[in-house]
Image (cartoon, helix red, strand yellow):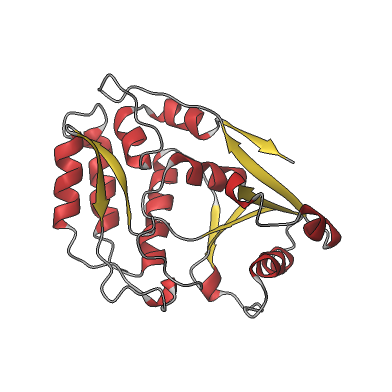
Amino acid sequence: MKLAVMQPYLFPYIGYFQLIFESDLFLIYDDVTFIKQGYINRNRILSPNGPTRFTVPVPGASSNKLISDLEFSDNTTKVLKTIEQSYSKAPFFTHIFPLIHDTLKYRDRSISSVCLQSYQTILSYLNIERSFNKTSELDYNRSLSAQNRLISLCHHFDASCYINTTGGINLYSKEDFIQKGITLNFISPLPIKYKQGVSNFTPNLSIIDILMNCPKEDVIKIIRSYKIKN
């Protein structure tokens, strides 16, 4: 079984969904500290004036608190208005905006729950099935180092392969994983381009931009556009 672990990000970029797609089980890493100014509660979309950031407030957010102890504000009117104004003329607006609206209004306001809802909603739209869990709900040794926590999580689920983004190449030792009976692989995204309705293409936006502009079959092709580095 292939396992992937990542902190929850709200409507993240395509690379996050590639990681989900490549895994058999995806763990939402929410028993670690919240990162301010990161992508947990914000991302970028393409407005008529160019790339713009949207942010969902997290009351009481602090780098001293665990993600699992924080919730999104239920005041998402500004975010929804920004997304609507940016994509009202996009080809798939009528299909995608209701999914975004319902996700941002999801009754369970915990960060990991809203983010999980976004993943499941998008994958359901694309007819893709994947399994998820939250690390905060698991029984494992949280006192270990970052790398050994991941190895522990792999053993918890009898995973023989751990999948990570290329950003982890310098963080983790393939030899250490192999010694524990686990293969360590990295996802390497291929260059992608799609019609955005503007002349200059802007990469690495929120998945929202791809969903608004591309038919399902093209979104799936884009998600599949990666290689695995052993």
